[in-house]
Picture 1 (tube, rainbow, N blue to C red):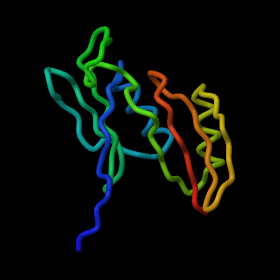
Picture 2 (tube, rainbow, N blue to C red; picture 1 turned 180 degrees about the vertical axis):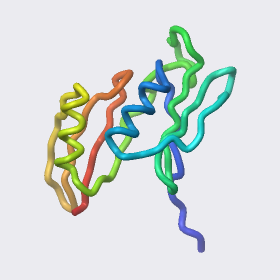
Picture 3 (cartoon, helix red, strand yellow; picture 1 turned 60 degrees about the vertical axis):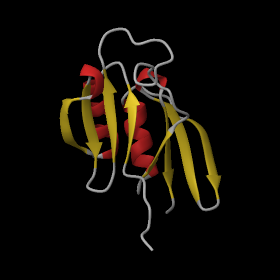
Picture 4 (cartoon, rainbow, N blue to C red; picture 1 turned 90 degrees about the horizontal axis):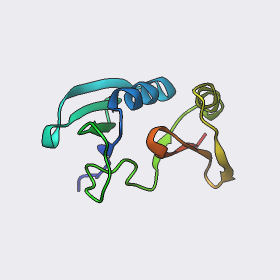
Length: 126
């Protein structure tokens, strides 16, 4: 039987370039693809060879209930890292305030609210 895995998440943001740049900086990711997206929008795929986040926008003021036009329409994005202390330093240097630190079985984690108030969980299992 094949193993299922999460390939990507697609989030609506106000500025795909700004969000992509931050994610690449914090997590040492790269831009995998950039171009026209659904509904005349613009998408930037950032991640590694196995998975990625799509930063998507149709531009302009985005409000309402349409999930492709509502920034931050999700609970949080979880990112596993090897060196959680190094990523915490990068998060703080980028002007974001980590919160909800926790040690739990089997790892450690913290959260921060990134661009468009999208919550990101940073976790390590080391």
